Length: 478
Ligand code: ADP
Ligand code: GLC
Image (cartoon, rainbow, N blue to C red):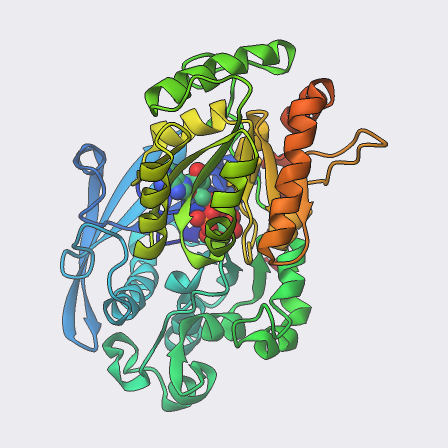
């Protein structure tokens, strides 16, 4: 039995700001439990729901020597759907309404977390063969492991994998201001961990981890280029021998149009027409015109530049004035996008509705009701929203980048193949053209549209296939 410990800053069902939580929460359930004992270790944020916190049981506590002096590390534990979760408790670091705060606080917080994970291992009675670290927040684990525990027999055989979910976020800050890294050797701090005169957690993780993966094959290539590498493309090219792309899946149990309790009416490939009732219900709930013939476009997203909202803002007026479309947006993030969507919904009250905020329930309702899901990302490591939408027969319109390119097959009207619409360049005109094309198929070729909805729903984007790739990597490594 191989023991794997996932270290991450988010995981469903405890704490989620984006797709990372979906992946960390779902993947362990899909790894062969006869061969792998997979557990997860998270920070015990104060913003984890009180209900969940009440269910955790206290394992032990440690007072560890750290650069600030003796630091408290509490360890809690809880089992969810057969998977064991551990939580690192320290109210100084993990306070606040959000898992993430200002970057200068976060670098110290996650350096502490990474150290605490390693300090905790002997107390967990679970010595992992592999620590699977996710994103920059856990990227220093391989560094502390080698620098502090390289000679320690308990830790010597532990291997590390680093998965990059988003190359843009690297954990960068002034070298001398990160207290919890201060006792690393100078050579490590000023060379391996340094990029562009700052500490760079992701760079350090890439150098120190035994394997590096990212969440789609195309993104694995893109991050090795100056355009996609966010300044670390050279480091990634150097690491190419240990780098691979494994595309994300989704949790088919959580996202199932036949059983989803959050959507008003269940439907499947065989009674796809029932989906219309969800559209009607959503139009009613959001105050949109009750119009079955309007093409309902859904957006569920973090509202950041990455997701292509510059393009959406550019074409909203023209799109609304030339086509019978409606737009439902659910998201939170940058003020400029929140404001522009507020503006459009106040101008087109019965055709655009923006919910600024986070709501699992509303997200499911949009996936279950919309005709089209718009995701024109500037870059997209994998993207789960397009996979979820396909599962509900909501046809994605995406830009051909990263995982969007790998998971959405462009519609071919001659062969009647494809699971969505895509465009290549980050260009508003090009995007509008493809929306018009989708609109034409939706309005004038309803039979073809229905066939595409069915292909979307039948496409297999479950974790099964990708989980077996992770399994192979774990076996090769240990
Ligand atoms: P990213 O991780 O870059 O945000 P993904 O497409 O991988 O993008 O994953 C986003 C996940 O977060 C999906 O499960 C999506 O439904 C969910 N999500 C994003 N914004 C919201 C929101 N405002 N409310 C509810 N769920 C959201
Ligand atoms: C990141 C990426 C997204 C990916 C998710 C899970 O947040 O932006 O593309 O799907 O991580 O891997």
